Image 1 (cartoon, rainbow over the protein chains, first blue to last red):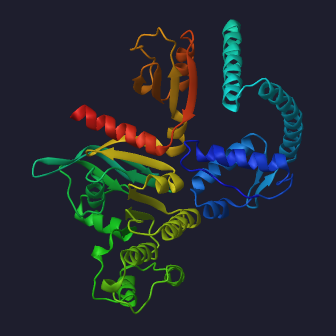
Image 2 (cartoon, rainbow over the protein chains, first blue to last red):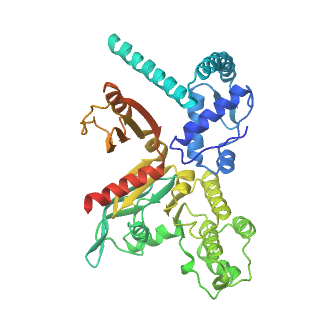
Length: 138
Length: 302
């Protein structure tokens, strides 16, 4: 597993670390039962704060991606592997759909930037739709 | 108080009627790597001098390990548990590297010979060279070695990477991280290198004109601050009343750029409720947080 963080992106480092571990599990770079580096080792390798590494590990454990075994370190859990396999299968299928849509839109003359904005607007609309549904339930 | 390495309340200090510290509050949790940020002259060094017992404050309290830094007796006890690293000018220029290590060692019963050997090798410090013949970077490394090797519970570093080249900066940062991870050492360092603070600090405080203007857990601050960009429809008047959480607003014709300090979801929702508005949100780095606060304070005071 090779990790790379962007310190000045504004995205909290513990979240970046969590995303990268999840990605490593999804791509199979990490498999269930694999051991993650110790907090100290990862902090030194990435030159980052050990408390931040510990926070990412705790959150990953909370989400069921990894297991923290007292005294022996952090391991990718069976559940984490299962979640990742499900997600990566889903992602593969979704990728085909998105690819297809982009091909059609590009053929009709839209630029990449225009497509990106369309997708973002639609995502924002979905988010608002959820908010409205939530309000109805209250 | 038990798990705070440093606790400062309402600290004031003036020099010739000019306030260097103007009611500073500071809480440094034990085991944290704490980045102390500010422009030149913001009060960083004055604060450190008060913590080290080298200056008495006019008003307020400064406690280190729960002990009063202003009291001469407890200041001695404090200093025996602190590693202090500042610019090389405090080193005796006529001594060689080896002499100054031999001179320093007896003051600290818990001196670590293993660390001494390791850092001498790693920093490539020539034992027989005089301090006055060392480059600024080499002097910084020597100070760091002296500060680290006596097993301090708290390291106070005043701009530890000043004058170092990028490779040496990375070496120093890695050693600080390793020290925090292996020994649980609390590290308090002042800097105006925002990138290195972003790299290793878990807590920060931004000081401006002798006051703490932003402080907290760095990742939480990054989650709280967001940039929200709104493009308004043609007929939108300027001067919208925004919901709580807006730290600053800039408007250039139809584009409004908002820095949110918390409550970003509500601000986005408000922006999206404007018919025809396009809303985007972006993460915000430490540099932007720093500049926004320091500049807006300066403008307010002019």
